[in-house]
Length: 152
Image (cartoon, rainbow, N blue to C red):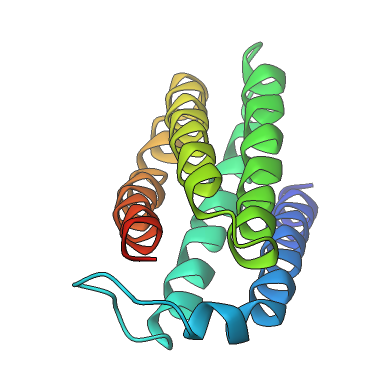
């Protein structure tokens, strides 16, 4: 049961991440033509970081699923909503080039991930704690997103 829960959790998280990566890849020509803000990391870093973050999300979700808690179901619904919001940010930013809307959406995503982390923490402390890097990365992404909007 544990192995199956982790496998499904990884498949779901990486399916969302993979779809977002496809949208991102398709929008890279347009994105490469915009002025980047200071502190923009090299492009090779993004897939490395996102792979780690999606793995942490999957581990957290599996731990919450496996926990014997009445709050697990609600926490997983919140998690699913933030996964959908994460994918949609890729569509808005890379697919549509809607940089201001993407920034506002990213603020909503950050709030959803904070809510996910808190709800995970209430079920399984480690599951909540390992979402902190995701929150920090999204805050940095918000800086980059706002910078792209302001510079272009």
